[in-house]
Image (cartoon, rainbow, N blue to C red):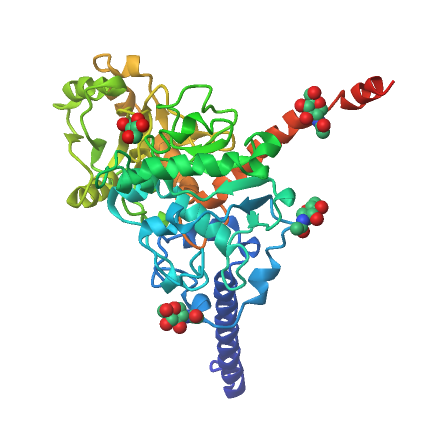
Length: 470
Ligand SMILES: *[C@@H]1O[C@H](CO)[C@@H](O)[C@H](O)[C@H]1NC(C)=O
Ligand SMILES: *[C@@H]1O[C@H](CO)[C@@H](O)[C@H](O)[C@H]1NC(C)=O
Ligand SMILES: *[C@@H]1O[C@H](CO)[C@@H](O)[C@H](O)[C@H]1NC(C)=O
Ligand SMILES: *[C@@H]1O[C@H](CO)[C@@H](O)[C@H](O)[C@H]1NC(C)=O
């Protein structure tokens, strides 16, 4: 009675072996689902855990490495992107390549206007460093180009259509931020820079198009993320919908929150894995700020805060640029801090906020004029602290406030940060809920408003026609 019969031992071994094998297949099939990228099958919480790509198109760091190097198209990805199911149908102008990938030095096949985005090794890279923070133009364009590719698994929010009368929005693929950053110098004997010339040509091109004339450009999407991009053209194209970082350098007629979309900067520090994010106790610095000093516009507050905070305990407050080693320092600095300051500089917004978010360092936003990406669907107060500039400059106000936030309250915000951080990732291919996907959705909400206004205008047309004909 004490020892088990031989047979039962054997069968229980067999049973556990079978369980192990079936577990193996279960895990294997799960990972296949991820690779196919049909994320509707993947629960949100699990999806959040696997977002590790940092806006890269490196096949090495891409989850679809195997997929994209396969020569056979994946039916499943194609089937999931039916134009009739997409939220946003986009028509894209075939602008000459000097407006987009030509600015990246792309030579490629001279007969093609666009790079083959189905082959990762053929996609031209966007210049690194601080250029990248305004690279929104690049990620949105790549995403559209891939929307008709069968072998690129992606979110199916926006899709490219080839008939402009079927489109919700007309996309203008001008890399205006790169054009400003790289081509603003006047070359040779002329008195204009390439950036000026491209903008003039763009205005001329758009004003001549039937698509523009149809709604006076209102249904056109123009990307101008760098605050100084489109400096000339913005005055002539103000009816269009802009993708911007903020409204700091725009007049209210040209750009406003009713018609335009605010997009996040692409963060420059590395994303912290949500599972490995340092907790309250593991972040020794209470308050972190690193940035440039500004003397003009709203930037004076940085200096005032510096004198208020510089001698406080557990506060890291330094002025310095974020290039080169600065980015690495900011990465480790933010990950070791509980609160990260975002103080208005020469513009209301900066990439620092998005660096803080992906570092899961609770942002303290001191910028009265700031506009935030997708704020209509995202409540920033759940994971950030807003302080009016006038309050922040009161002696002791800020430190009392932040020292008063206990572990429990901080951890609540930190948990929320870990959940929402994927909304601020730019990557190719795009995935459900990432920055590219969120921007398309924000655009589609603006398109609804556009349609609403247009329809309302039509209300009395029938009666008017009737009156006129009698
Ligand atoms: C992608 O491009 C590279 C470089 O031109 C080429 O060697 C490779 O065969 C291409 N892959 C596919 C799947 O076409
Ligand atoms: C584009 O779509 C419109 C409306 O759906 C249709 O009338 C027109 O024939 C289409 N044009 C082409 C070139 O297919
Ligand atoms: C550039 O030169 C042209 C012709 O010489 C002149 O008409 C124009 O005003 C100049 N533009 C600027 C910005 O100086
Ligand atoms: C209806 O009338 C308004 C105002 O007169 C005009 O702006 C609009 O274009 C008209 N709509 C159509 C469909 O003709």
